[in-house]
Amino acid sequence: MKKYILTIALLLLFGAAAGAQELHCTFVQNKTLKATKKVIPGSGEITFNAPDHLAMTYKVPEGDYLYIEGDELRSCSDGKAIKVDTSKNARMRKMRNTLLNCIMGKYEDAAAENDAEIVVEEKGDVKTVSLTARQQQASGYSRIIVDYNRKGLPVRMVLDEFTGIVTDYTFTY
Image (tube, rainbow, N blue to C red; front, top):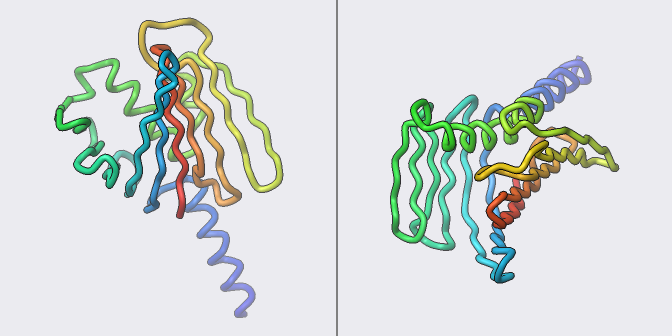
């Protein structure tokens, strides 16, 4: 009986994790400006509750944040705060949806949102998903790479923007 209960508990845990319904982790970020090779470090904490509640609070640089609550996106970077209704802003809606879909493991939806091709590779306990844009665009992501652990949680995400900025996140649970 104990084995049966343990098996059910593990299946529920893995099922919940695979959909990333709720998570809390720390992150390290390295943003690289391709033109100058300048690397801007960052770190902080993330709390996520599906389907659309994300709090990304930076400890470095202190005071920076990214919050998503439904259609509202609030961000502060270098002391400059913005608040956007993503239902009325296509560019920010695309960024919001891409981030949330990648966290939840819905990379097919992220690929559709970005008109990207998908390549999935599994090596050991890591599933690597690469999304590559089919066409050059004025803004957005030319490539997105997400590594998921065996529980289906994102452990690394690389966002390569058309503008030449590459942001590499590593998540620790």
